[in-house]
Image (cartoon, rainbow, N blue to C red; front, top):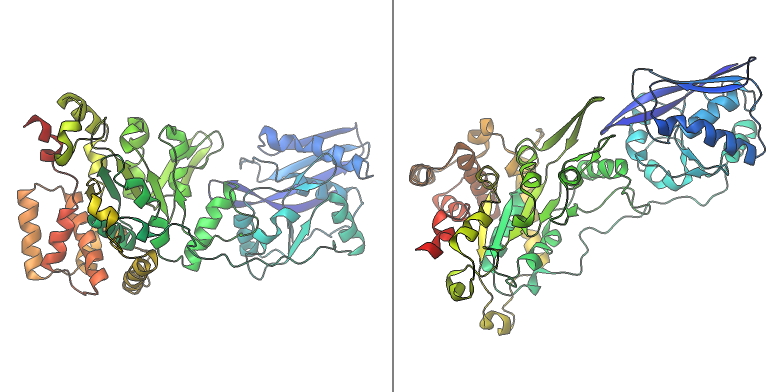
Length: 514
């Protein structure tokens, strides 16, 4: 007999429907699987055979052929175990004929017959709704994730025996209903009021978060760079439902979704160590998976001790910072992963860390060592940094002045949210989210400059020899500063402030040689 059930395969972030077909007929006893399968998929035949035996079901001594169609589409992972088992059960007559019509199933079988958790259920559920299936069968551990997609019939199973009971007798597994909790937004123990001094760095942080502009903090050890960076998540704007689903989809494929919170409620904050490999940053592998730049999508990628990262690793950032996606090419195809993130970086000014005007006597680095340290970060990468801030050592007065540590995260976040509302209204009907995403072709449309602002920008462009990329980045940052002020037009003072945050001048780095 012949039977078929729908399943799905993942190619990067894309989901493709797969027909799992089983044919059982008289012949030499054998179990064959075909259809462009990797070893994980082919192992399904051993898992299915053992699972059947351990729940009291026996494979018939017949010729069993399983085909995963379309045959030219590469398939990987263990999510095909359950649909293979269901197709064979139907073809053998263990469950009613045509009972799998309109059904999509995914899940991994253990040798005991239990159905294990898999990754990527959220995008698969979205695909199931798109193709109009009548029922999606998932592992019970993935139930909350699947139910995040509304108006989609879900059957969550914990063992293959439950599937047999359901299709034979209509018996549903007895399990308490899953109620997805509402995650609290941006609930953190840290607060911006913990930071003493560093007014310029705080201001730059607000601008960076409001417009999603890349930010570099340069300062001596103990000046509060990392402390400030760790408080950036407390002022990030709320996620829109579309952004939350976009992030959750990536984390589902990476297998990083929280079982209790299938739809994430906060923006990602990724903080990889400086020993990270290029592949870990970009993503990839034999079967390409999202890397740190994609896991930080719609959130923050924080690189502490920036100059300690391998140059090869840092240079990978150049393309995603510009295109807001990363493309990974393999012999099996091309994989695209989204990578629209705020790059937040921190570094010392020199190897010893004390290259600063007020602490020059403490710096033990030679001019060559300072140049080599600075040159670990290429100029093309620095050109993609929107704001750079020099963090001075914190003074005794800053540390001891009562209530001198400034605004709280809540008050700062309210400013960010107000600017975000302006951006959302500005970009309504477009694919843009933040000012940093404004393409050069639409700068004139979204960034109206007053006459004085245009003159100031022209003067800066000529005197500082700005590149075209730097010019547009200054305008985008100015747009965000104007939004924080509630100004519909960009004024001269907005341009002046944006220019103060340009990458540190050569004169700073070469100060010791003078």
